[in-house]
Length: 167
Image 1 (cartoon, rainbow, N blue to C red):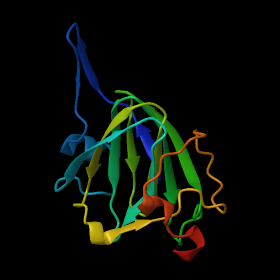
Image 2 (cartoon, rainbow, N blue to C red):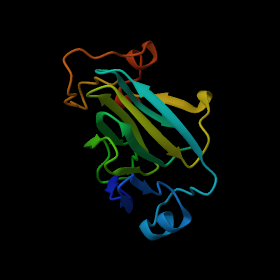
Image 3 (cartoon, helix red, strand yellow):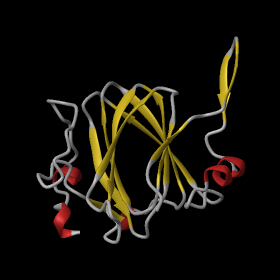
Image 4 (cartoon, rainbow, N blue to C red):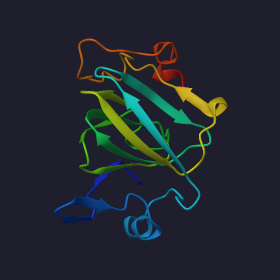
């Protein structure tokens, strides 16, 4: 079974800064991604401190790569595969500016909290479609996620997400 994991980037450093591939056929095959990132969508998200987005997933399911280009986030990845031994378990990652790439396999919901003003790049293995979007309530008591903010900023869509046990 594929699980979320952090990926060290091969950075090419010099006095100007660094250059790193975020997605390439070489990277995908060497890490044995389940997603097919040869036909993908790249998206950018900008977030103020304390913004929580999620927990989101698409049907049909998408695999994702997440990379923070500015700031710091608490990233939450929730196993929603009913046939999985870890169904209902969430994984937490702290992602910092220009640090590591997070791989999120299919059959996982995704959300995050901006711990400071942040910009995030997503690479999706399928194009996003609003009509395929599903949301699990970010503060569902059954999940007991320990979000790292006392003053969450939440969209109405995320406030009105479904309870986890209803998916």
